[in-house]
Image (tube, rainbow, N blue to C red):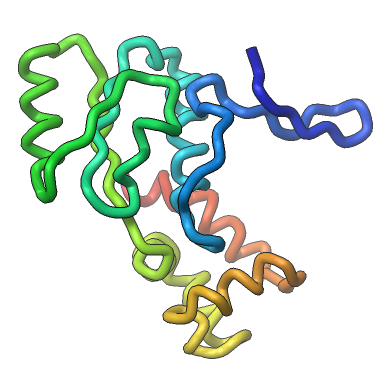
Amino acid sequence: MVAAETVIGEQVVYARPESLRDVPTHYCPGCTHGVAHRLVAEVLDELGIRERTICVAPVGCAVFAYNYFNVDGCEAPHGRAPAMATGIKRVLPDRIVNKTNGITPRRWLINANPGLTDLLKETVGAGVIDDIERRTRLLDSPIAVSRESVDSVVDFDHDSS
């Protein structure tokens, strides 16, 4: 069952993935955790592996990730999520073990898309990278973004594998 849909005209342009629960999150405005969760949930659904997936959430911003995914999950002590995920995978080798790390929007932006980072610095000013309130305000205002920058976001996953 789809929990939420966005319809424009007669075309569904967004449907909440089944792997993502329909609950409010605790993340700060402008944070990329919600986007990352949605993308992971879409992949789980697309690959048909939701029923076999176990989420390991670390201490920090991602600590409640197991509340947001419609999969089995657990919370790891500080710094032990990789060891815990490894242990689960060894005991249950047929399962997909997803270790969710917290990541700051700033670090994600800088590492995931240097081109977009440079564009934002040139267009809005270098302070935008370290100022979460400033980045959040950008969500409410239109920005001219080149097709090349959009393509670099879309192609990021292919380049990093």
